[in-house]
Length: 233
Length: 243
Image 1 (cartoon, rainbow over the protein chains, first blue to last red):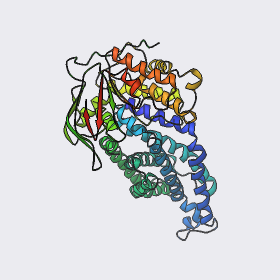
Image 2 (cartoon, chains in turn green, brown; image 1 turned 30 degrees about the horizontal axis):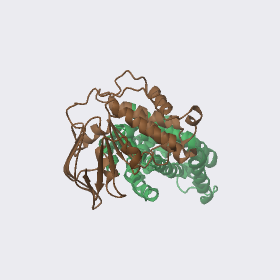
Image 3 (cartoon, rainbow over the protein chains, first blue to last red; image 1 turned 120 degrees about the vertical axis):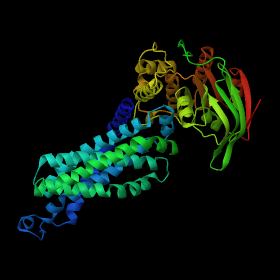
Image 4 (cartoon, rainbow over the protein chains, first blue to last red; image 1 turned 90 degrees about the vertical axis):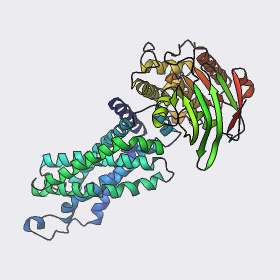
């Protein structure tokens, strides 16, 4: 399974490096979303609330949610792309014929999507800090949140991406399937990031625990069900 | 040039490679195969002929463990084609060249052939069943050898598949099949899109494979060409096979 996963992940990443879809399309899209959010929320608008909150701009206060929304929308493109390359010219059939362990295909594809998301998160994250100006906060909590949210998006996205892979309506079907599933991840990631940036780490770890459980759930579901999904698509 | 030894170590010589009895396979509600009977022995080169839509491609996919059997019984290499586990075992032993080339546009020819060669090697090796016999070298060497046999030169190897002509793409796809070193070659219109040299090369590959113990089922409209190769010619009409 691990050898299959490595082979699939290496192939997918090689294709992305060669096609430059991540750097030429997905990354600019993520940054564009970030900038457009900035246009939608005036930077001088202040938060109503405690003295501490009132000292922050609305944009700064909303920055965790805006960042994760930008990542989520970009992730949809990466997930769609991950299966678009298999849906042309009989490649999905060839994967089945090659005798791959389905769990290895799931892990490999998840790993490739996660690697792309990490690149996105670093660059879009720098953009968010520059544009919205939040404090750095608790790096350990922030790092854990980013790591587990990446895994959650990659595992669930890959599982539901496979569901839409064989459909001619894949481009519109995958977001419809993935967005509701990732809504709790968006909520948890936003809350944990808010906590790490503004409140210290007290309440954030609970959300990190939720993200970890979500990761494990979809990791297990993917390993167990990907074979059936590959056969049916 | 074509001096590769085909591995036949784990075929029971007395058993047919493919045996189908009363097989019905539906595509949607349409019976692509309607009560098909077929027995193919080891070393045979079977030519399937018939009009478009007769069920030739479905029959090849079924023999590869890639199409469902809705009623009837089918086995290949002794594995039950009606079960998912049996299909998986069969897939590891066949090379299927269909209408699609199954190549990644953004990878080079060499990267594609190496990827599928490595995939096949890992797939075969999962339970220790190695059809490569262990003496044929690494996956990379196997891929290099396949490309050489298909006349894919150094210059062409480093070209992205998206930039290939249809004929070059077809050659690369055949190289992928060759690199798998299948025990059962399932070729659907293998000459389509190839120049005269390429067509001759396909014939030679099939002949060599059969001489070395592999089996081939070829669906083709090029009857004169394949007729010379075939040990048996079968007609497929309306989803049924007849001699």
